[in-house]
Amino acid sequence: MSRPDLPIGEIAVLGLARSGASVTRLLLESGRQVYASDGGSSGILETNAASLRELASRIEIERGSGAPVLRIDTGGHDLARLERAAMVVVSPGINPAAAPVQAAREANVPVVSEVEVALRAMPDTKVIAVTGTNGKTTTTALIGHLLRGAGADAVDAGNIGTPLSQIAMRRPQPQWIALEMSSFQLHDTPGLDPVVGVLTNLSPDHLDRYPTADDYYADKARLFANASVGSHWVLNADDRRVAAMAGDVPGRKHWFSTQKPADATLESGAHTLRVLGRDILPRAELNLLGDHNVSNALAALLAVSVADDAFRESEARVRLAAALRSFRALAHRLEVVGEVDGVQWINDSKATNVSSTLVAVAGMRRPTILLLGGRHKGEAYTGLAEAIKRTVKQVIAYGEAAETIEADLGNVAQVKRLGFDFGEVIQQARESATPGDAVLLSPACSSFDMFRNYEERGASFRKMALQTS
Image (cartoon, rainbow, N blue to C red; front, top):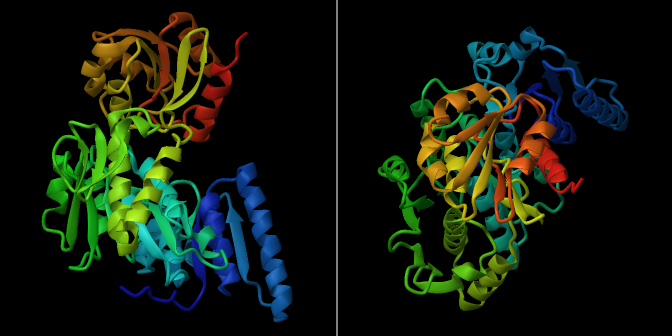
């Protein structure tokens, strides 16, 4: 589908963190008038606001008209101004029920994501979009890595960390985007029409924001909003929810599986990743922990292979195999940070829900000290019980969710309940582990009770884990 122009008039941006600041810059440099606001007032927000005001001043001087192009409010929102806006761009961290979003919708002002604005500024760029409950970040990074390995001009963007609007300001713009889409971003990106759409898996998540799991799944289904007979979808054949969601979606469906024959599969006899009837790489040469990462690699290989005929040629397959060999685990995703005194320390801070932690625990091969905790997201932790019984020596529960974790798992494993001192958590893990064990940070919770984000949590774990005294 074609990507429409932005409406005439002032555009409002809600949120001035990474994506909000980036899309405000894109809009200003595109000649638009912007009202940007954020209900917070942190140092980072004030720094972003100061940078944007400086940009706006330069633009006003260059135009010579004297008309202001930007107004910024921090610590609150001008609801009346939002109601007059031509469009409101909402950051993914803002709840759709928040007052400024509701005010805009009640005034019939279009509400869109930062990704939507960026896509409209990139009419010629091809998109491979990835969503799912778990594995989407690694799969997105793999797709970008494979595209570059095959010789394409490609970047990774979206929920993976780089706002798409930042890429939209690049000159020249890239040929391909590997685009990670969260459910929050999908909610407000009506124009998403990827060359290939990937759905990694589905399980309940973000129940602290969605009333029910079905509401969460409904946002995931927006990946298919613009499906047509010419669409390509890469889908997990091992996930019944994925199969059900994609059942009536128009377009060509390409399936990946680690358990049975499919378009992309792990060939059981030779343990080889096989895509569209061709062997690509022995499993032993994939430098990623866990069977779930085999699934991610198959999804990425399949997505790139169906995106363009050129990527299925024999020379391209050789390049894809070489790229896959060179790929390493992303930070905070089953990242082995080191071994100290015979104990392996693994940073899986990105595991912010139970299903992601389940995958990590199920893949452990050493006796494990499991660090669970943070801000509770509404899921029961009992789903971890069977996997914990197999490999976990001790669960260390911490943060806001500690009491709930202890209640759910106290009859399954030894649970040591701690508070909000992360240093104490690491020290307890160090004391509990013996040579040959692993300490796994896979929290099954968000980080916001103790850290700004999961990256800060993982960085703290990495630093403390490698301290020897």
